[in-house]
Length: 169
Image (cartoon, rainbow, N blue to C red; front, side):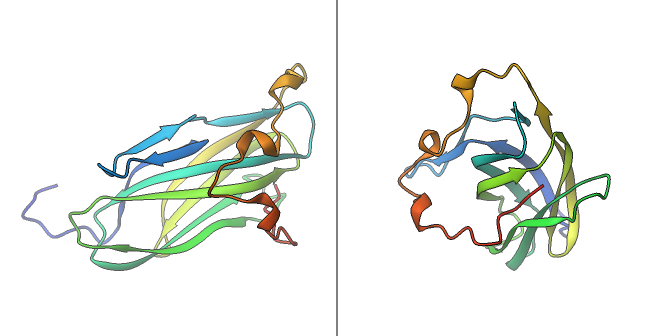
């Protein structure tokens, strides 16, 4: 991009990562992604993944408020598309890179298949990512997820009202 040209009207997605957690260094503001993964596996279904984080790095956004929506879809069309993240964020100026950390708790998958993660900024699709859930019969029981494995001080599972809004695929 020519630095003398105007900023594009569509934002740029510099990176999208799925991981266990993101640590932001308070002194430097650097983001450290912990436990990056691109698929999940389970020995039985339905399966609930207790906690994951979606990290996005965006640029070329005009100054002001913006809207982020991340949905999961079943490419076969058998299941309804579900909005997982729906939030606003601000860009201080067009030359700034915006890093967004989005925690997802208790995402439930009904079966093994490949899902689509759809990322929209200001109602425009900027990226579509495949996320595979695999059946793995020999998955070691010692590696099963439990809520205790993912406890952190920023999240209290007992205070979270799951209600009827759990995301299910």
